[in-house]
Structures are given as structure tokens and as C-alpha cells.
Image (tube, rainbow, N blue to C red; front, top):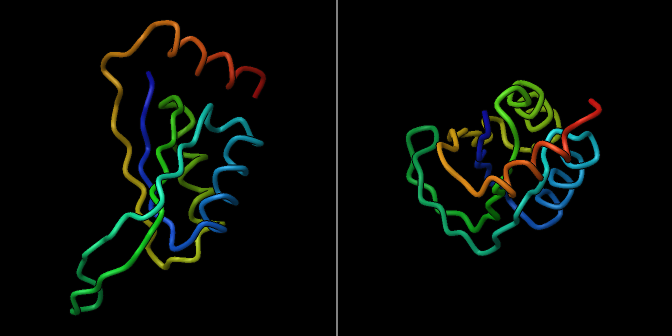
Length: 105
């Protein structure tokens, strides 16, 4: 029922804007911004390296389609990283808090 969604951003402004948009739209209960992530990846046949900010987005599975759409709309990358991991276990108090933040949408 709950998910942790990972998304990298090129800079702090992008990360902040996405985090605030997801919270404001009640798509996520919490978004952690982890600065200083060094990414090494292949893009268009070349090995690239970039300093990025990682978003850890806590939400519910039913919000995933809207989260993906919002990230694609607001993100500057042609193909942004959007990876959802199901949360199999967690503190019931914390999971209930996530749910309470998403009520009313």
C-alpha cells in the first residue's frame, strides 16, 4: 500500500521545487532531499558523471501515477529517474501518518 519513490535532480532548486509541489498536491507525505549524490550512468552511448540531489518520496501506491506525471512535467531531464519501491514493513505509527497526510484528495 505504501511506496518509497526515488528521483534524482540536477540541483537544489529542482529538488526543492519538486518536493514542495508533491507535498502541496498531497501526492506525498514527506520528501527527503539528499544532496551530494554522485551519479555515474550511460546516456546516449557515453558514460556520464553528475552531482545530483536524491529525492526520497514517501507516499501510497495509489498516488504513484500522479507522482510520475508531476515529476515528468516539472523535471528538466528528458528521462528523469522515477523508481518506486513497495514498503513491505514499517512503523505502523509512521505509515498511519503518511496516510493521514494524503487524506482529502
